[in-house]
Image 1 (cartoon, one colour):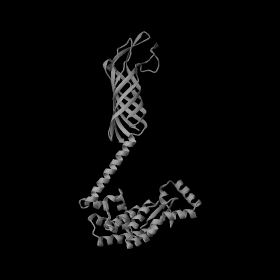
Image 2 (spheres, one colour; image 1 turned 30 degrees about the vertical axis):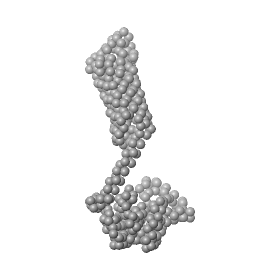
Image 3 (tube, helix red, strand yellow; image 1 turned 120 degrees about the vertical axis):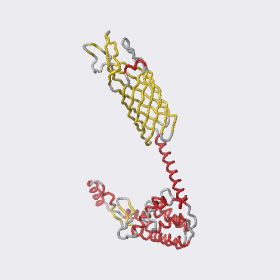
Image 4 (tube, helix red, strand yellow; image 1 turned 90 degrees about the vertical axis):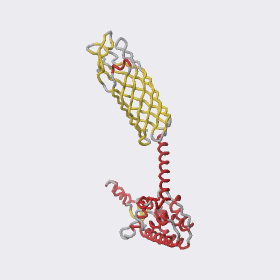
Length: 394
């Protein structure tokens, strides 16, 4: 019988109202019913087919039925697993390495369901269908679990089974309610399963690594926030080191990254006063407020799973404001321009550590070739280092 699917109960009230209205307006047609019948055909036919093929010992036919059921639109994977395993045991072809990677989750689900059939008034087994419907397959499931239980008991009594095979039979008969707990606590008794579990974990890790690297190395845009320090050298050291805040926007592929960068330094008082010549007059200042705008190119030459290292070369413009005012005059005198700037060429290294494929923390260190030209004033020529912490995304 078809029932409305109650999974939508958690939706907002207005969505529930709309959902019920939609159901009221459109009931299943004959075509819908025929389609639903196809989707539930395997579980409704399973009790008959299982009984007949087990009696006839037609294991190939039973395996084919399970394989086709698995390919259907509404497979009961935990039941299919039990059929496949016991078919292989019956034909003496059971091999642990044929188990699906998610067999542990399926065993746990099977054990819960077999245990729940002991309380038949409360046990329910539904097949979800399109159109917000589901089929109540409880009676079919109870029959199937009963047949599989009898089959597993017959296997234990009539066939010479290994310890691992007996373990599966005990799960299918309902004697083991927590299969994974048994495997974890008695791993030495099931060395083949323990080895297979380890193999699965290695394969999953390998797949995760491949997926991680593929996503990380994809051609994509970049964006990041930067927090760093600016360390002038030479005569420019009198300006004092400073904290900087900035951001970058760009594009990258596996080996190359191109970024536009803007970095702003926090206004501060300099280590000592310095003079600036404007309109034939010297102005004394101890104020500093600087910024950098540039274009960075990074070529990555070290690629590991979680980190990468690259060489950075950049060009840009670096300047500082000596006036501390937005106006272009001070005490009635013209001080334009209020900034002293320089072409900036820099080289350095960039390191990235990936928290996930699209998120990283990094460190960038560069040495800047600059030449502040303060003609007629205090010599502030020199070079500079910058070190930036980066929080970015791809």
